[in-house]
Length: 286
Image 1 (cartoon, one colour):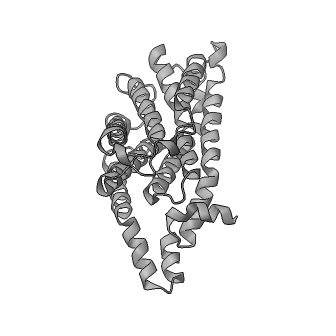
Image 2 (cartoon, rainbow, N blue to C red; image 1 turned 45 degrees about the vertical axis):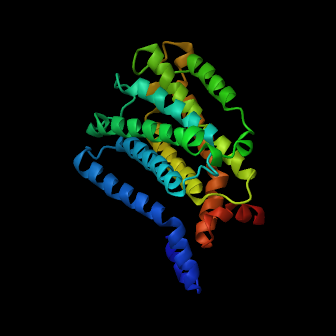
């Protein structure tokens, strides 16, 4: 809808062509997401409300795929936060520990049997590839100094501490229950290094803004699922677990609020037909 409005309001054909060129690979990725989402919903799900969790994982996977494709095509990791991707890699690994051998945190419908797990495995692979690109293959292009503002190890340690205290017990096996909570808590903070990196740059790589937008929408879908299912996470028999479902909702809500300002400027940038590399300029105008 934003692109259509841009075309209607733009009198310069070259600007339209530039917008298409800049986002061509993103159109391909999101077009693929639409097709896969339709196929999975029609043939590999029960059409149940819990499909939102599978859809969230699918959207997250395509977001990471877009980053992998963009880095490979540009042969550069410029503008990509290694710290953010290392956090997401830890998140993905922790989540796999809780959902591969157990079923407590899977979607209720049949998409949770294999499809959801498959998407989460692909997320782990794609995130690992991005980390490899930043640390090894395209290390020279990675902006180390611009990504130095946040200590992500402290974030990881803090989230692990809280997960050990406040975690549900749907798997009825503490290490994997802690792993699931740890992944959720760290995921709520994982985008902070990238947001901080934005403030250190004059221009922003458009694909990183699409990535964050995709992740935000994915987390909103997961939030919708858990806001109707959070009571299952509570265990009244244990004091620290009596309200863990409420805590999970608050953590997810914090993540959405954290990304709210970015999403506002992202939407305004598209509405005005501006290159997403100018998103900071739009923010300064407010």
